[in-house]
Length: 308
Image 1 (cartoon, helix red, strand yellow):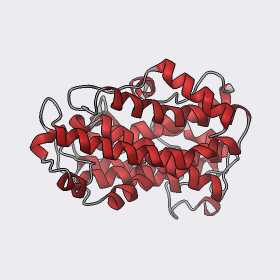
Image 2 (cartoon, one colour):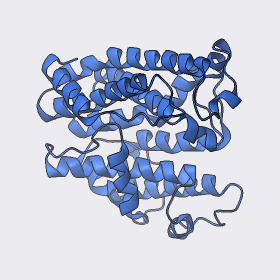
Image 3 (cartoon, one colour):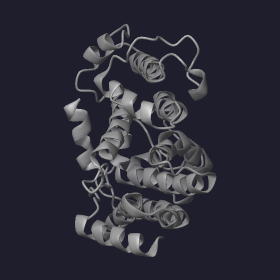
């Protein structure tokens, strides 16, 4: 569990910064722990997948075909236990699947969600979407167009922002729309940073129609350094992500206090990462473009003051 949560330090933005109250930080880390657990299960990055399978009563071994899908199914069953435990058997208001196992959740990172569900008006849907995104990753390795990638982000990224707003009690249709734009942008930025790593896993998150438009082949993405076409492609996708950030940034100005500072930090992380990608000449194959912490702090301060 500790290894999973320690990955928070590798994100482009502060997951649960110290200026937040302890209870709020705990809730955010619980959500992060769930998301990281599901991602690691889907990517085969769990420290001990066999132990997780035994804990969740998932048959088979990590070497078996379909093991990761089975593990994700086991995590979804544990999510049912989270809501059943938190709601004391009254599952219908939150849409938990009928017949869910009423036993307490088995995985320690899942058990951390129980007090969160007890205190806040959250539903299983965003958690299920994050699990579904990882199911998609088991079968889908290419995205024909930008619209297809955007749809994937509705599963893999947007639920996180919706959970943050729900935990703060500030979820409205208008804020959710702005949050979705920010979260999709953050996901695209992460894909740009991880082109080489994703390719090693057999996945390409750059739309195939854009590869064709810039004359980029999969062999080009496997090179040690980016060709001119790859750099142009990355610059194009980065501009799309920046447009989404610009569209969603007014979300910051719709809230106040510590939530405003938190959302400013999230959004600034995206801008700072895009600046880092630009700083290496869009060569994300030769360089790991990570945001500069001072630049991130400056961006966050400006967003906090201006509200966008």
